[in-house]
Length: 343
Image (tube, rainbow, N blue to C red; front, side):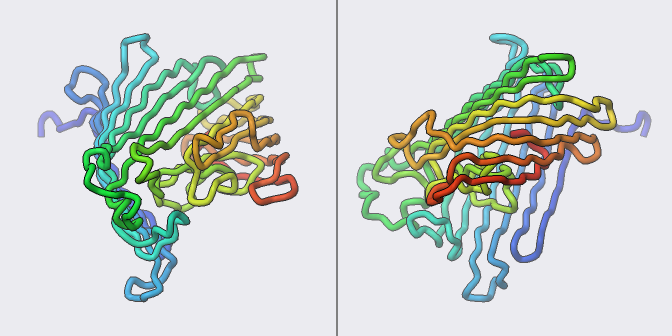
């Protein structure tokens, strides 16, 4: 070939992950970073199949399993208005949940097939100076995930009388999230970070109610740990994983964080910074129980290390001042390991 064929930055990713019968994950994706060839409009397509089970063979009648198969397409754009720091992401997704005696902890729904068709968008603004250890600027995002209101199109069905399997055959909900970070320098190495976030999951039809999927689970390190059942994991240091969560998952949560960070190594091969923090949050089953300042509070210290080969890693030690639900004493000291995420 003369000249040698070259691409324009397109990427194809194929990944398989497994820990035996308990968990398997397979996905493939394609990204075109310059859709249309004129602007940096990023188009991505992904297909995936995930399996979670109790580790029993498929032929065993005692097997409990959840299979999730899906496909999604997304388009990311840089915006010129209101200013050059804005971005917009839009996506369409189809996801199928296949439950076989799988405990969801919600309305005794543990067997059946649920289909989720949703549209999502995220409007963001980011004017921070650097990605790993920002010293100034802000990062704000507003996101929504919406399914069609299937039940509102049918007035001949009494949804209260349906079984859980029938009610959730077509999953419907609207989900809203707001995240905000603000960074300000005290000295060239000491930085303040304040963070707030809010999430709400709502239904179109009160007779149908909320689905058992897409709910919020608050508490702990914020890592999914091979959990794939459509839940959203929200970290809250000083408390055990998912402990600040109503039965079956929450529909509304809030969280606030104050951090002071000091960088001790800042070079291309490694960035290292310790931090101290205070944070609080809570999780509710419905909007009517929501109290903005009824928080599960904690404070502690941690360390972050970023290396290009491994990404961001860290550890936090935090003290939870309030009892977990159904607890009598303060949560106390907890240790959390961080991989590839910020609180």
